[in-house]
Amino acid sequence: MSISVYEDDQRLAAPHDFEPLQAAKKRRMLIIVNPYATTVSDRLRHLVLYALQGRFEVDAVDTEARGHATELCREAAHEGYDVVVAFGGDGTVNEAANGLLGSSTPLTCLPGGSANVFGKMLGIPGELVDATEHLLAMADDWRPRKVDLGVVNGRCFTFASGLGVDASVVERVDSNPRLKARLGAYYFTWAAISTFARRYLVHPPRMVARAGEQTLEGVTTIVQNGSPFTYFQNRPIEIAEGAALDSGALAGCVLHRATPMDMPSIAWRAFSRHARIVRHRHVSSFPELAELTVHSADGRPLPLQVDGDYIGEVDEARYSILPQALAVVS
Image 1 (cartoon, rainbow, N blue to C red):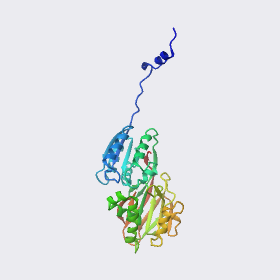
Image 2: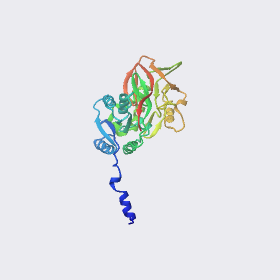
Image 3: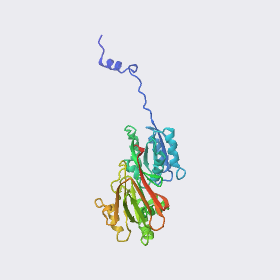
Image 4: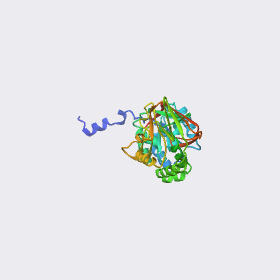
């Protein structure tokens, strides 16, 4: 007796002919949320968590004070999480990186700050919805890798650190978080102009930077672990040259003086797609740095910033690099 094509298809498709498909095990994800970050709200947080739970086994915890993210990341690495997500600004990312330093637990980011520099360096979109979709797609394209970390006075940084004008601007911005959240990059611009006029126009604190046999004196030093130095909205701002997250070296530059004649041309170079800051006659560069020491030249303490967070004033800053010290996934 012949069997119809339909009956044959039904027999081939019978459930007992197949092993049941086993659901892939979800990776454990800890999301560290800075509830005070520029763009983080309860509504956005809940939407992001709900979306990521489709592909990951998600836990989330809010930071409660400065340094809390570092403690949480150390615990996460010890407890065997597959990935930690820093959901906040670059300060939250910096604390998370310091907590995961030397562990195998990779770090990734969701944008919650005004610049989100490190996340963009990793290729994560600056818009939260796009970044969440990026992390969801990452579940099927899981490729952790190692990147370098810079170090200054024992504190690791992911992309950049600065002494002088740069740090003074960050101090001014951090002192008014409401305007920082409301105006973003435009508030940074206003803070830069007003800070320069108040503190660097007349008799600014001076510093000496030494790397090997090279010694440079100036009013500002920038040290980068990656490129660019920062972003104005989505436009990259380049300062030092030659830095990359996996290069095994830092890059630095020194601004020798800050006068009303010099600063407009330096600002123009920062925003230009073709002109370069290190070609300015009052800027000198330190390429391929392994170590750098910067100290006060006139006895006045120097303001220091790390990854866009104001750290305080120091008499001396010692820079070094930790190659391949941080696992990331993006």
